[in-house]
Length: 130
Image (cartoon, helix red, strand yellow):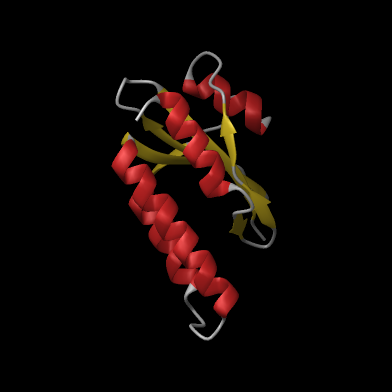
């Protein structure tokens, strides 16, 4: 799948998908300008921040585990299916898949991976931490 096809599919998969935290924030596909640290700083407004790397599988596992706390909540179970579909798509279409995060009260989260032709792709969201 080409870079543009992956971006198009990701846009559809993340349309209306929110990261649940103390706030509900959407996912955006980010165009990389310069290096990853430069892009992180420009998007997050946190120049020089120490972005911590995390395994993407662990990131999605935590989201899914938190969302399945109440299996009777049908809306959350639908959200779990969307996250599982997104994770599967990313695993199948991107390599070197990682999550980077920084921030204190507002945590900026970037999901990074490489397409088959070596282009870097970024998804961004944020979470409010209290």
